[in-house]
Length: 168
Image (cartoon, rainbow, N blue to C red; front, side, top):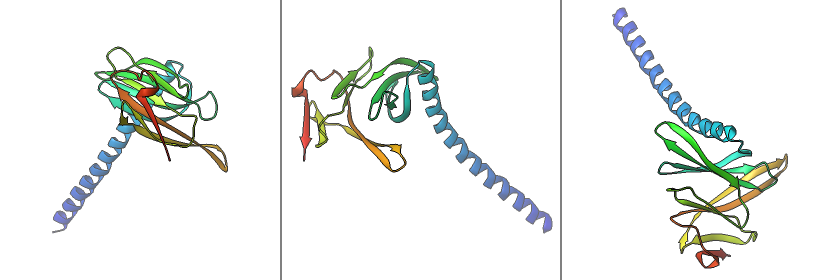
């Protein structure tokens, strides 16, 4: 009876430990992906303070980052994933109010950062686009709100008629 109890205790302990280990592996997989993005950005002299957001569209990874260029400045980069390798495509500072960037065969990413703080929604080609709000801790008791909208399209917006700003 003691042997059966001891065997069951050991089996339960091993199963319990293996489940915890699997969870840690999944977390490390997520961290290693973001770390690999950071590594490629550093290798290509892409200056940034922090990654704000990234989107995966097919084989392309679009990264939005807080730029080293000053308060509220943004930078974006495009990477391509081929099999298990990340390749640097391009990166540049975002120039308000609108910056579009694309590579051959990739969707066009358009970042809209209006100078008017009363804008509450943006549409590109008549479709609402994703809004991102990031709070940058500038000092101990002060954070700056960085808000922008991002669209992925087949072609860049051609003018004011393609981008619509909605205010309250």
